[in-house]
Image 1: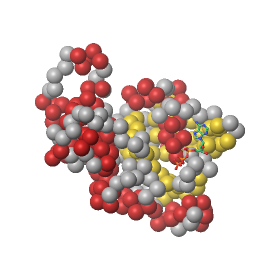
Image 2: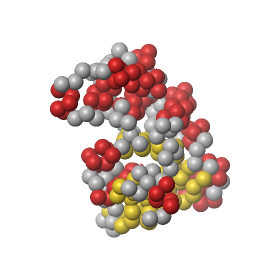
Image 3: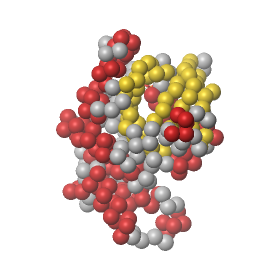
Length: 251
Ligand SMILES: Nc1ncnc2c1ncn2[C@@H]1O[C@H](COP(=O)(O)OP(=O)(O)OP(=O)(O)O)[C@@H](O)[C@H]1O
């Protein structure tokens, strides 16, 4: 096993997958380090969602390697539930919070989900749990709205609440799909700060089309196109790459 495999949190090497003969991923190689925040950009159909599907076990690769946690775990041998348990959380584009519950209860439910049904039946909230919920509320900027029904939150706040629910499961890697679509400019700017804070204690991979937001993140950017990496580096490096301009930014 190579040094890159053992030092990385997530290691994809030569991953390919086809749907009806169409190569959605074409020998994709992609590495995320522990504690790294990484931005992914790329045109529609580039394979961004398919890559997330491979990591979370929703889709199986036709070929290639997918390792987690310093090469210890072969994700291609695990199902979706096992991968979630291993510490990979995924936030889809549309928020899916429990609208008729309060913000606090949404987080409490997420904390309980980690414990399983039996433990939850005989469970009362410990002071440690309360402290953790309060900490998450601070992180996702919702302390002042903790007793509000989730239905009454703004779209951006619902996105933050769902990120908080994922944090309650203590993922080592958080995958976030287009979090700022539909957010106000202020919420978008705040989301960049929030994700940078979250990435202090875990790795985060965020897919976005909003280039202002990507610039605010100030992290390494990977541009995908036609199922493989077109360019990777700082936002200035990637956005000045001729292939990126032709395939994505200049369109
Ligand atoms: N389950 C599937 N069956 C058939 N084709 C699929 C399937 N999933 C993805 N594809 C195709 O694979 C290609 C890559 O799609 P993918 O959704 O990964 O791109 P994307 O980069 O996430 O695009 P977007 O920015 O539009 O979300 C697309 O052409 C898509 O139509």
